[in-house]
Length: 378
Image (cartoon, rainbow, N blue to C red; front, side, top):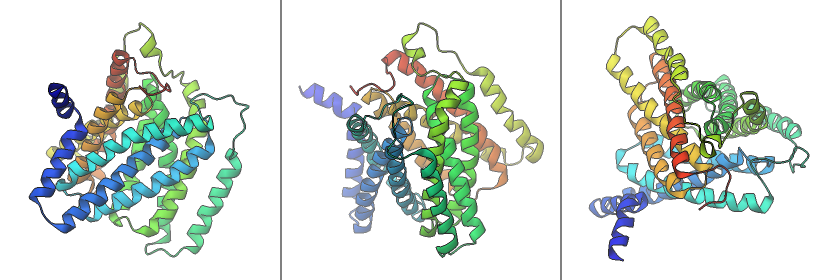
């Protein structure tokens, strides 16, 4: 019994991270630090609960469920990231952030599964099934809301910046809605193309958000653009996946070996050749570091994205450790520094190739674990 308890404590990342956080609080008896820990655990937990809801809603058959979760996820992420950006992403909060987000990832899947069962949302639904919110009327209404925001809400920055950010957010969420589905598929080209599109737009969006220190004035256009893009991406994702002939569980149930994405990795890696043509080999150490961080970050994102869609809690738990830890370190080391044009290619190439590798690793893990998509949790 004791051996079993010790084994569970030493192999469960939540116990490990929780212990680290407690030690930090004991050794650092400082009320502002304690407040930061409490606030960040609560917000990061809610962030990943809401994100887990949105991630699953984006591949389910209910527009209303998707819209509500998109708004919730946008608000919680904005508030959490704003706090971290203004605190300069201190490494002292790494364990705290990971604890909250990993705990939230598990509960996000549980809550989402419960809601899906209640409202009858499925990964596959009859095309004749009526929607509470019809797609095109919802999009038109949201575009009107976005236009009214740009016209009447006073912003502390240039209106062109706000409009650009709203458009980038729309494209980012559209691309990410496609990417969520592409990550869970078994088609490397579909995944690679959507990953490159999403990462490119997200890179520009991140640069603007950090430059303006996550000003609250950006929240509403970001949220509205995010919801429009997310709903639109969900609407078209299935058609694109069918066009690419992307399956979801054929690698799990079939006897076919999971192939390596060598061709796709080669093609997308050519971006570094373009980088050398424009910038040469100057500052190559920093470029290589960014390439490595982006590569690892995207592997982790691909794995955890697939894990959220599948029926294995252990798979989700450890992939969340990898994902949230790498993301935090990347933001701390790189994204909060000055984002310049010479960082574009290594960030895009690293993320795109890493996403493909993550897809490959995840498919092999799913085959071994027999982790299928859209089956009740176990």
